[in-house]
Amino acid sequence: MRPSGSDADDPNAPPDPRQATATIRAAVAKKSRTPAPPRKVQAPQRRSDPKKRPSWTASERLPLWIGLAVLVIAAVVAGVVFVGRSGGGNNSTSANVPDDSQLIGLQTGPAPWNPGLDTLPDRLKPVGVHALTNEGEVLHIHQHLDIYVNGKHEVVPQGIGIYDGQFLTELHTHDATGIMHVESPVAKNFDLGQFFGVWGVRLNNDCVGGYCQELTPWTVYVNGQPYHGDPAALVLKEHQEIAFVIGTPPKTIPSTYKFPAGL
Image 1 (cartoon, helix red, strand yellow):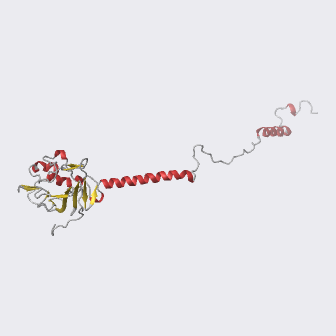
Image 2 (cartoon, helix red, strand yellow):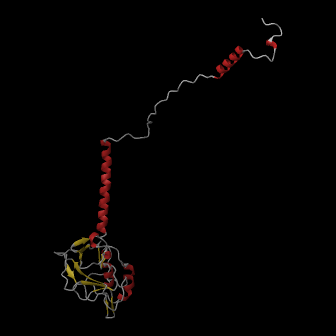
Image 3 (cartoon, rainbow, N blue to C red):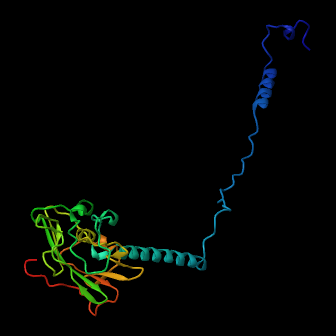
């Protein structure tokens, strides 16, 4: 026993070493925490999309391929029909197709047709040709035209496009052989509709002169082949053989013409 008045009651006495050690242990025990056990990590899994359609089987793909093939064939056929109706190799590119309603003095009766000179000056502008004092030399080409009505050959008259010795147009004839002269001072396209406009004979997709498809079927041939486009839009090219076959066809439809030397 420590006597009264000992160090236990002395505030300046040094601390008891045993008491200090107990205090430190209690603090450490209070601060230390047991770590939580590791969480299990689940491996990622592929999500299934309920909207995604499973792969098609061969039997399911067959109708699809058939449908695609039908569409491709239809597109090809449509392209062929379009080319055929536009003339294909018959050179039916656009030029200046006259509007029949704007042409004065058109002949709308049966063949043969006269040169149509009486009203030629009135048709120059709507046809798209000019009154020339000399034949053009920049473009100088020739074609041959035949007209058959129920097997009979009709004359293409002399002097088409030559007005009473005063002027001539880029499109004209010098004789009754059917040779068409295209002679222009500038390089440009001319079409069959312009030639018929100069001639003063009606020509459109339905009628030539007084012959309309509804009552009298007719066909245009170019170099012996049927032409399925608008005949008025046929661009004139060097040495074409153009034949109108109206009604009953002749025994032979010409495919070529022997042009004289120099033409």
